[in-house]
Image (cartoon, rainbow, N blue to C red; front, side, top):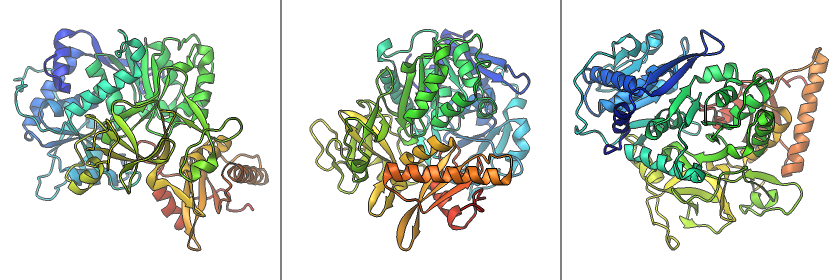
Length: 581
């Protein structure tokens, strides 16, 4: 293939394998077993060309085209058509009716689109966002499902100049106002090549023929877009997908799809593995065999060893092999992928908690400790652990910021030159032999290298400093989550001029009487307090028990800890434990 852009590869697929099915959307709304809606490579490219022709009538090369549509084939077509037309695509989640989505407004104000692509059922909800942004005209709204996209149109020349940026991947905003990461076509192909080398060295760095991508991940998120739309085109694979809501409604659909389609290649965040393991019955999997699953990537959130163990154990009786689990680390600023471990059972290592709290990782011989999942030995992209203040590489075992270098690193944030220079233009002071000086991507994540393997602690901005010692909220949340089985937010709240640990804990209120429910909540608080004390030598200033769904999260499911702090300070949580000691 001579044109290695995403659209160039799509064009080649449509020419060389026109009748092969490219995407199959499973519609569970009209049948609980799922109604497959297929689209071949030739059909897909024809519709992409048709919509690109419409886009050109509503804007120019370099304009932004925002996708505000439900997850479905129209979303895939819209994203690809924007690229075909030479627009800069902006994938977003469709706003819910009746509630104004401040994130959507913020993104539209930042990127100032000329076009919003949606579907007819969502047009009314999208209309309120189609307003003038500064000197830019009000964006046109195009309902993709109302158009005849199979009509013959004049092709847009492949030689025509395109903007350097293919699309803007807006960050989820867990720690700051959303910023648009500028992703190029070279970023996509480089990251795809890196993923294939690391995920499939045992297959010659290429997945075997007949690979099927299985996905329910949202296309507006970096992992969902790369896994469910971009990688299948570059790899030439059949993609079977549904929506996040259909997964949440019945988590068993995910393992069912892994079993029903050959050589399944799939991915999900940590919470999805918990849901699937807990809410899939033997009846759901009756007659199904997961022995052909190729790889199951766990990413987007901190990967917890206990979660992987539960998932593998739950589906072992249906042929699932633990060695296909692939803990993965990445971020939108790196397109998606940075590191994963070697094929085989996930690497899990126990470290001394006391040493971690003072910034050094020391493996334990035996006995209790902090268990962390390893992410292999990164080679491409290159990874170094750096002191962010001095910009010096730290010694093996020392905790510092994870920096990454490679062609997958994106070119910056949309119209934010200062943030771009700080995040994407970092340089090392006195780099070690064979290590480039720059530019490096500052990930904002804390980690370390132990025996050549990468381990991740958490976000720098989320670090808890209690009585002068460092504590990592992900670890504390995992400890509490093993007791309660729900989402947890560990935060630091200033009291008496010092930081105190507060944990917001989602629980189910259980008990036949109010007295029994109160006793259950009290037992939870006692168990959690005891576990925190034993594992970290900490006494929590407050343990806040709240209903399921009360903890604020980002569009990708990450905890918004800053929002938790604000809600706690303002006494805005609906506490279930308000009447117990």
